[in-house]
Length: 76
Image (cartoon, rainbow, N blue to C red; front, side, top):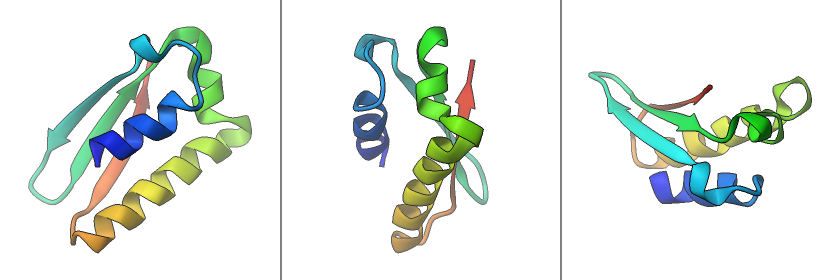
């Protein structure tokens, strides 16, 4: 799951080395905390958060296939 998320974000940003994805496992769901370069956060979030919401939708649907609840947070 982490590789898919990283692939999606790598195609959005220019500075691929600044991408950091941290997985936090909880009792009921896994949370992926995504950090990118401060200047490129707008590329990942998009206008009115549409790109971020699309990323969350893709990851949640892939998680549902594996019977897992997954959430994605974008952190500064």
